[in-house]
Every structure is written in C-alpha cells, then in structure tokens.
Image (cartoon, rainbow, N blue to C red; front, side, top):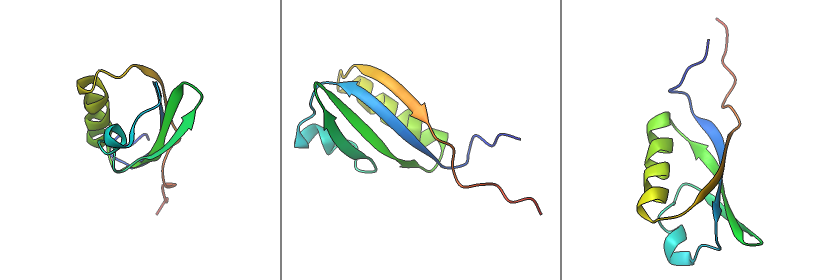
Length: 78
C-alpha cells in the first residue's frame, strides 16, 4: 500500500538560473543549472516538506516546469 508520509526523492525543475541567494531558500535540495532552467533534486522526509518547497517556489514567483517523484526507501514486509 502507498504510504504518503514516507520519504522520497524529488526532481523539481523551475524556469531560470537561480542565484545563490534564491538557492538558499532550498537548503535540502541540490541544484543544477541546465541551460535556462534550474533542477532541484533531493530527498524530502514527507509530503509536508514537499508542500513547503512548492509554497516557497510560489512565494518567490518562480515558474514550476516539472515535478518528478522517485519513491523512497523500500518497504520491508515483516
């Protein structure tokens, strides 16, 4: 069964090359400039953290281009 509170890795693509100041708003994420876009990648511990990152993107008036989730740690059957 899907557990929405489990940590997962995310790739978040925004338009523009973010400055070091703007990147400071996303301390949990690694940034990579790709042409005219910035890719933010990292593990987030729960959906609330993801919502916080998305709210920060909106508050900074950044344009969200793509959001990808890559699952998390495998669940163990006991």
